[in-house]
Image (cartoon, rainbow, N blue to C red; front, top):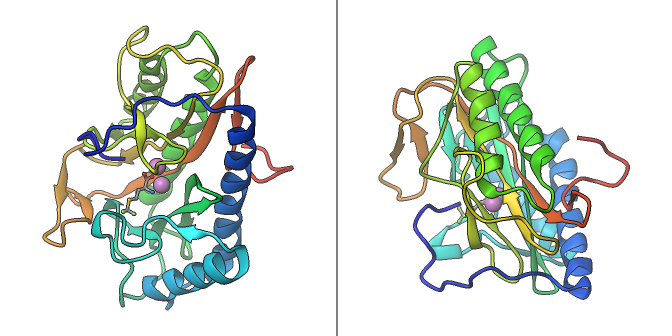
Length: 264
Ligand code: MF3
Ligand code: CO
Ligand code: CO
């Protein structure tokens, strides 16, 4: 998620079958939190109430560690990014209102392994521009996932996402990206959501990483708020993001954060 490399570079780790089993469990648990919280996303709820409900569910019911809490000083257990907030929104006392769109980003640690996933939710019926960017961001994620198979390269993923977003007159945020994931929250490689076909790392079985395109209805430029976390669109246009954790398999990919029986 961060463009700058982590202080501790963990490199690219290919997961063993035993590690993959643990990644499946972590991915499923992260998805379960999003399923659980969906019905609470309503007019009048505050984002810190959503944080509290998720925190308690993760810690008490799932017995997982909420990875964001104290991660590089992040103060809460989930990220809540409303309307023109692109990512890393900090849950707080502000109430959701009719017409809001919100990204909820969940990362759990179970048995030493991370699962990372986010979705958009709507309160009532948002303005068309907000609905549209939410849908296009989802399409970008699906298109990116569709590229993942051994022999393809990271640049192929970025290119496919960028092409779709820009063809729909939306823009791709450049400053934040997907990432390798496993024992560490953010491992190598960085997974850019823009790029050129044929560029970058070749995908191989056992690689686990996220795709999490941040798509703006307006221009791509970002601004970091003084809290040091909240990233907003410079032009205040609505922004949307969806995220899955993926495993490259021999024939394609497995979506570790897709609930069983659910399709994309
Ligand atoms: N979950 C985010 C990602 O997809 C990272 C959040 S870092 C936090 O990479 F500290 F803001 F929680
Ligand atoms: Co992520
Ligand atoms: Co995330």
